[in-house]
Length: 89
Image (cartoon, rainbow, N blue to C red):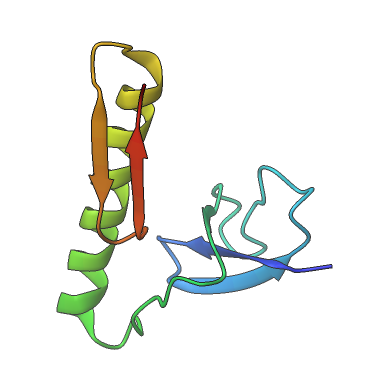
């Protein structure tokens, strides 16, 4: 079974867990980790600028996807970072 990457944004550490685990808490700070698909390459936290830009884009795309799923008037959505294109027929 594939494992999913969970990242703590506060501690800037990543953990691999089973996909069945929904809300993974960071073992260090106990914040809820962000779940990321295994095919997405996450930049190193040592590269602070790329790390910040990546997470801004990632969260923006997740918000767009949530809005698309909630609002039937939106007919098409393109997500570059997630490499997805959603079309409602």
